[in-house]
Image (cartoon, rainbow, N blue to C red):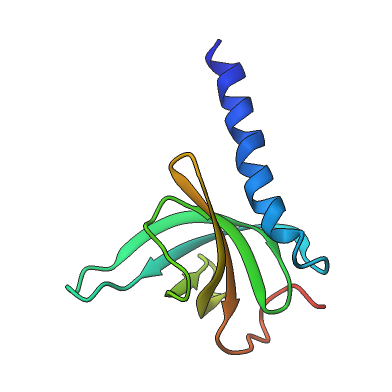
Length: 116
């Protein structure tokens, strides 16, 4: 019984990101594990491990449970160091305790793997 519920939730998550990706037809599916870091004024950074699901040369799409908002700056880092860049949230969609996020890099990252 639990297994069916888990599958349904995964399908719902994918639909939220896919709705954002529809705005960017050049986005390609990827699976890049990253650490998302959002700085807070009180000096405590919010951090979360997630996976970039889709990407272009400048925009990435992922799910987050962090309380992120439009135009918020975040840092994206992966384990092997090939991605460590600031981004700004340009679109989001709320869905059942998480957010589908579209974030645009603030600078060009020549090491980023998606070419458009």
